Image (cartoon, rainbow, N blue to C red; front, side, top):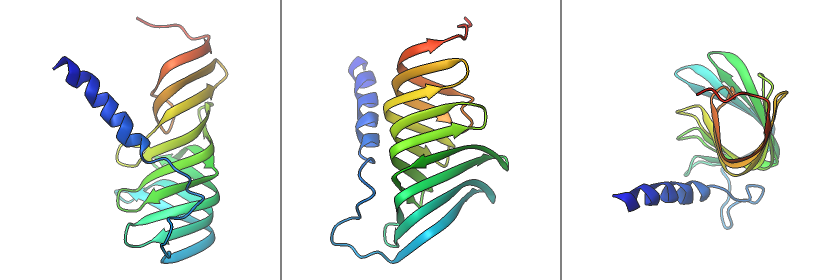
Length: 175
């Protein structure tokens, strides 16, 4: 049982890392069904907008429901109809079936509450409205400068966890 507790997180980390890649390059040997420049895609949950994706170049494959975003992307996140944060990246992938997003390359996420995060890849899971990365991350706010790996947060940056943290904060630890 003790080994299972170590094996499960390792397996989750392995399989979640498999999603990263260079989305500026398209899958070899495949021809896209659609190719669109300077577009935006709206993602909704239960009829309410949860994100808007802006792409300089979007390539769509109908069979896998994958949209590859190249040459820059921006995603605006919403919760209860209100803007909460935005993210920019070099490239990414959106899966229309699950409405999940992977952002890769010079990823910057800025919350309306004053947090800014820098990393090389970030995942957004639509069902839970959570973002996470297994990569190194830097987080800045008026009170904090933190570095670490393995980050999970809601898109408002109200409830977040950074594992293996380094840095400085002026906040008190409430016990």
